[in-house]
Length: 132
Image (cartoon, rainbow, N blue to C red; front, side, top):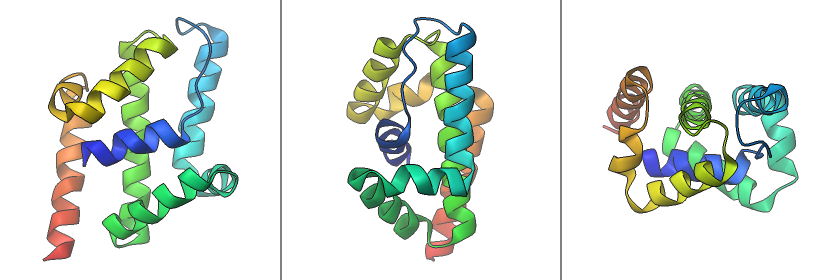
């Protein structure tokens, strides 16, 4: 599950150029979080990117329902927020953390807040239960 969320962030999340959460970085973060959580904004981002369209189809297949799809994107937004804050908005560090997380999801998960980890576990259980 964490690997899928890392790919979502890599494909869909636009990167702010600042090294810390100054006003411009904070606005870029807010715009990214809105895009991940607002289906109409997300649809626009997906429509213009073939990789994002393919990833969205995988997410929908994994989720199995519109409700769980929205929960996955909501969790991706929460992870992006955690990542941005833990790396002080440093884009290079954020990209490095995402790349490392694709190789070692457990280490990446350790960077997440307790509330994000709890939400991740809850969503993984929902998806697992739906497949039974």
